[in-house]
Length: 282
Image 1 (cartoon, rainbow, N blue to C red):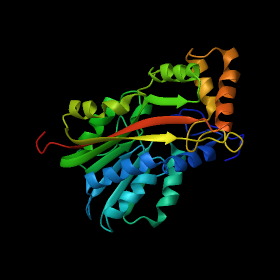
Image 2: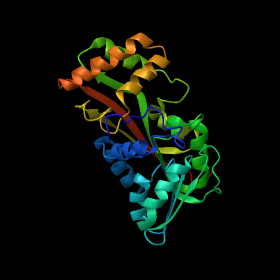
Image 3: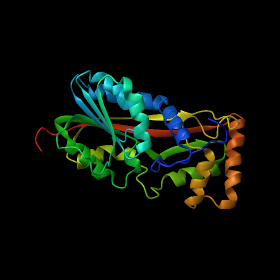
């Protein structure tokens, strides 16, 4: 990733993004985070998929996680991936050519799934609910298409957990204050996954969490910490929400860059996961 290539904090407007390649590369990098690897490994054990089953992923993106789970479904199993972005679906289809089971990727609406009731043995959604206008409705839809006794898995971020330490209390305080605000989307939904499942009538089986830590950032090599949004986009977001004045933007970015160049940069973000079982009787 070049030093001039950036993307913002949003993943809800993908198609038509002039920096699509950067966005896909960033999503690939995100999949390498240790916290994501741990959550997905935990989820895989919880789902315990077997040969011949059908798995749905809503918000599949370029297909990272679900194509790994396809290995558990075998030749006679089926994987269905849905995403709101046609561009993401195109990437997922290209990557699915060597999948271990039957695969179908298509554009779809998480709030109105074009799938019949009780059609899947399991369903998952990862870091998608935070971009939806009604995450509770999406969880209800997931529950609808999973058969009685089937399993659901949700993984999502709670952006209120984002912290940054560059030796400047003012910078840390502004980021902390800004990230506690929902700002028109359910940015803290990760911490509410069990509540969403329970409200949908689904029995929560297990919950866990993982925190990713960035302990370095080299500004001269990348505009963003590995797999993360750019620091300039963070500043722009704070300006947009009133947590930073426009005339303070450049100083804010410069403070973080200087700290990172001196080796004094740390940032953390926590993600949550929950698995649940659809009741045998509805």
